[in-house]
Image (cartoon, rainbow, N blue to C red; front, side, top):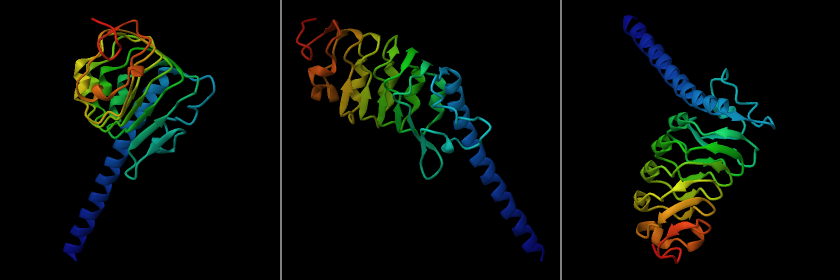
Length: 210
């Protein structure tokens, strides 16, 4: 009888620990998304369902989770959102797709996005982002699509991005970038269209001597 009691207590303890872990995980991701929402102006109410009082963000509009209830996709393109990106997004460690294109976002790209190790697609094009391209993006080894075109980005293209061997698509066109376009690694496979309409860029990729 005593062994059964000990076994029952152990089972209850394990269940409680599992629930606390799940709630903690959901709360961290929910807090990250809530911080992002706080930094945005949402004229069309797209983010109305992003309620921090709801433990699980997997129920929120335009948020997709995997089978383990980790956020894996954020689809907020064409939502007329104004505001800025926040470092808190780096807490979404299982995020694979960050689709924020065709909005009115401004400010810089947080260096912390380099912590999203499972990211496959980073689409920030057609916004008003400023500053430089963070060299920390070179840590996104799973990245296949990197589209930052049609913003107000300046500075050079980090040479470290050439180490991203899985990159299939790069688009840095229509910015204010300058300096030599990297030509090694995955950049060797990219068309000149990926870099067009950046008057300060030079090198074989754009047919302009440095």
